[in-house]
Image (tube, rainbow, N blue to C red; front, side, top):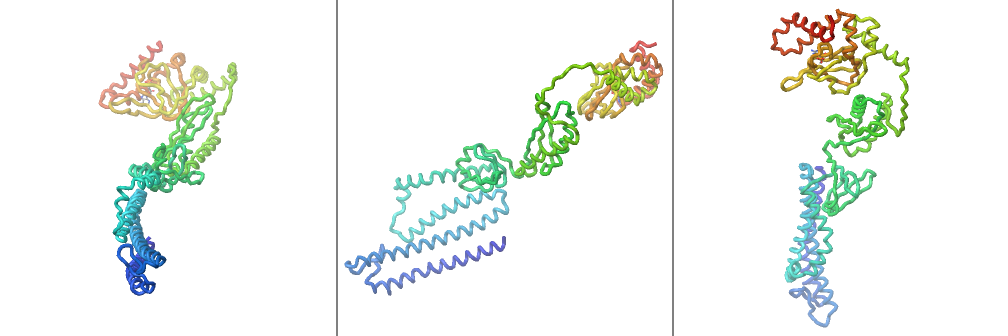
Length: 502
Ligand code: CMP
């Protein structure tokens, strides 16, 4: 940059010196021609328009002399204009150089440079012209000449329109070089340059789209600013049997790893619609470099395909499912009961139960699935069932004045909901699924025969209920532990009463 400046400065100074030298030589040359050369041809200088013949009989010489005179004037004007142009350009270069380094909006300076340079050139031309031809009145050019005005006005109509639209746009600064813009009815691409005439946009097919400012001012422009985290949305679908929680988790993780997807914001995966053929999804993610959004979108789709293939999630395709209601095969039902009773045998409170009792309980239970964040039971509700966690995890919470206090987390083979089931009291806490969670629900009616056959079971469940109750009681309640044994007796009695046991 420094060498560039030096080069420009040296060129400028040399040019300046040469022009000034020529300008100072012109009067000398003119004088020499006037005094030494022209008289040889019988010509002399007169005031006003320069040369006049000594003799009226030499009309050709008159013409030559007048041309020579005009030549000196024009040369002088041209040289002065060159001087002005060179100076303006050099000064503009110095200003722009600083502007490009310090300003975030260098295009504004570029536009201002063009406008102010044109104004300076026009003024300089008139001033220089007037010094050479002081007798030619220029004011009518500005005041009297309607025709000239109309001609110039018409000629510059487009240009001035663009110029003013450009100025308005720069004041507004809706976009800058490097931003991605979508101009309605014109195209989409990256802004390559902004000038007083219009903008150049490099389309994604690597073509150059040139739109004049006047046209641009009338169109709707969608801007994805360069330094902004601009979002993209890609659609996909799954079959109805695919678990939403699983889909959300897998797609989010897959998209997160795609190059150019910003790690600053977590991709959002959500259901758009429950469509005819399956679940319609969208994933929204934010890009580091929006210019590459086509590539990133493609990569996102690709990754979704791979993750679905790995996780055995199927894309939905137009299908017509004809469902016939078959009787559930006996063997399948038996298998299900076996699996369930095996799971129930792992639950601590059911350890004393016989195989038959477990099977009885398994046959009476039914499986349910919950989404992450879904409440399985809510505090205060009536409840006549208890739950065993088969897959996933839950948190038990009670509302405090300003927040939800978590009492504990339960995972596979844990159970909850036993308090209401056994005592008939409202639910003591809310139980929320932390992830996709499958549970086995057991109703009161299924428990009654179990209690009748296992009187000790009531006692062991009471111990556990009491333990959980201590945690449920407010910390200030000092009597909870002291009165533990008498409270246990109350629970045992209430269970027996509730189940009609002796
Ligand atoms: P229930 O009152 O029917 O409904 C809410 C359930 O949360 C409750 O039964 C218990 O199973 C469970 N629960 C209550 N308190 C605790 C605790 N401290 N730890 C674990 N589970 C609890």
